[in-house]
Length: 341
Ligand SMILES: [Zn+2]
Image 1 (cartoon, rainbow, N blue to C red):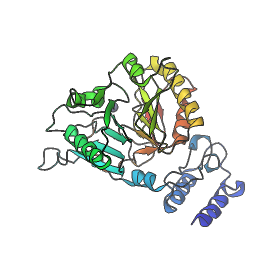
Image 2: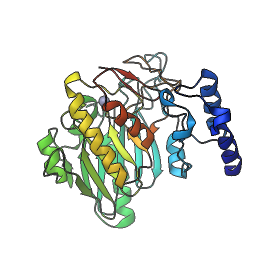
Image 3: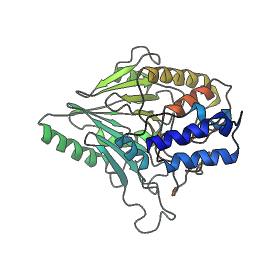
Image 4: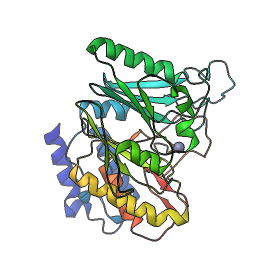
């Protein structure tokens, strides 16, 4: 398949066939998307179509098995009628990427935000990224879910596991479930302001420093990225290369106030610098709001998203965001995310 792929792509990007100048035609874009889809290379995208065609933007590495699993996962996505019997079940969906890595999503009929949460487990520690948009255990039994996973792990390994509950940022749809973990033994629940976040992860020079969390044989780096919210941070998992970016980069609307543009520009630049030294496998955010039609999102508050964009983004999307942030503050709509100002 790779020989066939190379042959076709070589043909496509050769100037005679694919000389599209400053903008691709709709036909060229369509053909490019089809080729990528047919060859099963979801990491490859048509690229920054406003600035040319395929030739600049093709990462050569195919997705590994875990990334394919994440990219192909069809999540629960709400219901046409959330009052219909059964529409609020299941309360959440969960993907076990591997025995130490779980992705959880809430039901859109319970909260239209339907945030994603991540659980990463090392030899002596676990990290829960966000606690969701419910404070009722009936709506979201997150505590019992996490307790069950960690109890199994502790039994298997014979070691106790310290749980750190942290957040990509402090907006309500990501921290409501903190309440479930207050008072849990062997647990740290990180606070919601830059000072608390800095202290918890050893970031002395906020927002320029990089902090860390040691899970025992598994290290996370913590990169401050204020802009969407003052305490926004990204988490990089050195074990997998996955980068958790919260609401600061995801297949949806990166909400930013005009006055935060400069702060966010610096954050994105620092994040890009970090990824220059630490290769990124997947960029994983906390929502999906785009459809799988390029540039088209679901209306805010949607409780039914049957044609969702896949969860992962990739380094090229961070590069794209970085390029956008170099310009003046303005609303932006791209294939895989938007910035509504
Ligand atoms: Zn959010």
